[in-house]
Length: 140
Image (cartoon, rainbow, N blue to C red; front, side, top):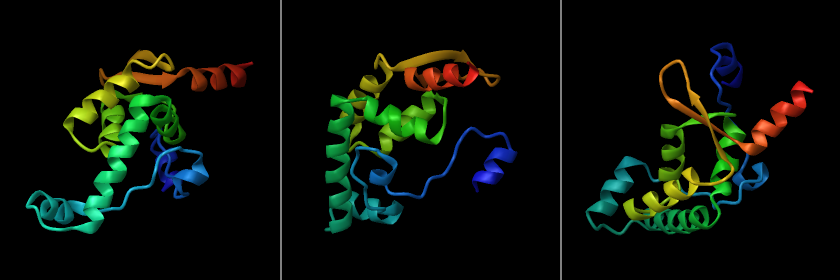
């Protein structure tokens, strides 16, 4: 998959290692899928879905307190990101709409986030100060 992504000039990579092995300080969440989410929404007892939400709540709290955790995780997959990429990551690691808004705000106002301007599709692109430093060292 990574070879094909590179061939298509897509700035993303897949890493199947655990979050811990990747150095990402977030708890792994269970995959519950759409059917599990619907059961939870109906009030049915779905242990895995409840665990998923508890972990998402803890991860969301961690992102709010330390948004660089999210930025570090995102840049391990791709060197630049869009608003959509940031929101998708935060959504995956938060529990509800209120926590999502708080976590996304924390990420987007982090002093580590650097706006790069618009890409060819007119989307604002971002990176981190760390990635910029790596690129500058590579240029030198």
